[in-house]
Image (cartoon, rainbow, N blue to C red; front, top):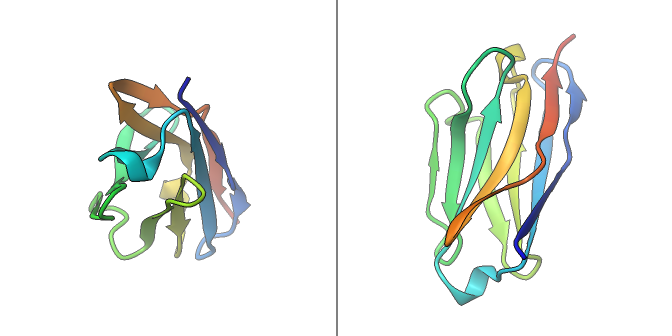
Length: 117
């Protein structure tokens, strides 16, 4: 059974930083090629892709809105993916979701990130 558990969200002031974690179970990063993604959904808006990483070789990609500010990474030993978010803006406020495709799409429960003074 694949499970994704997010942590690390919260309230931060503009310009601040947060690191989200997504602990995966039910599959192992090092045993195959998986794409892990972070999405976000702000109130009244559609869910959008923020960043992705290919678990075996670490290639990454980012939405234009977060390039240069967010960094996605993975720790194969912990089967965990991270999203380091720097220089946060109020428009980054959203529920952030971890996603994995393992024969089908799996989603975490979502975690709130609020950027406000």
